[in-house]
Image (cartoon, rainbow, N blue to C red):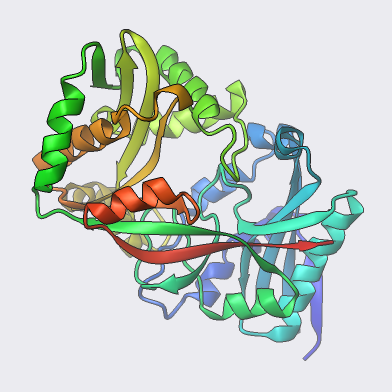
Length: 372
């Protein structure tokens, strides 16, 4: 059967692009379909400020007219300016276990990236580390992913390696099962940390949302600036993301640490909404919203997405204090387990801390790259 690769140019093309997962995962009970409305919102270049500093392109693979796969590519000026590199990203990769289609899609992304005078293609992602579903799972438990984390067939790793992509960085996800009680040694440490004069760890004040959001944006850019994969967020881009944060995030799960009145760190944890979203198969209407609202009351798992402290304050145990406050609230609402993700594999101090508290490094994700 003849294989063709088509650029996504029309609304009908985009609709077909967004629905490829319904083919790939139609019989997979672990997959959580993304909300179609949110995905269309992301790709709206008139509304999403990411596309003010990033150029992108999308492609579909068809066999005799039937869609069998997809891929996207982008060049993000913010990333290349921050790291002084020439890198293009590929992502939104979904395809049948079809060697010809896989190679053709990846070659479309590579050629487009090379045509923009880039030197490296890196991925997969949607599109960058500032977005969800970053990396390819290559090891561990291939069970239902938590909110914001990717899930993929095992054969994708073979597709990438056959194309000449090599691992650039591994990312870990840690599973923490507390049983509703902190380890004794953690409790002793917490008592000392929280007794520090001038240290306050507090929830975000939603009455001052814009001011608090700006504090968090400044902390984010300062705390992670030299971390691998970091890309700074503009004021406009952060505000775009903050709209979702305001409606979805419980302020008691979004903590700001202050020392003598100065913001020095923050952490963000969210309930694992995938528990409630999975049965919806990507559709909130007409009755999905009601099902979601009822199901989210029963969520018993959470994901810590971000936790950072300014470099000059990192040896004071402030991060441990934020973990403690998060757990206090989580236990109170019936959440006794969770995931910390993602953590760079070479972030030895953080990985050692998680291991010492009995966490299980239960999934490994990989970022691939290739010279173009």
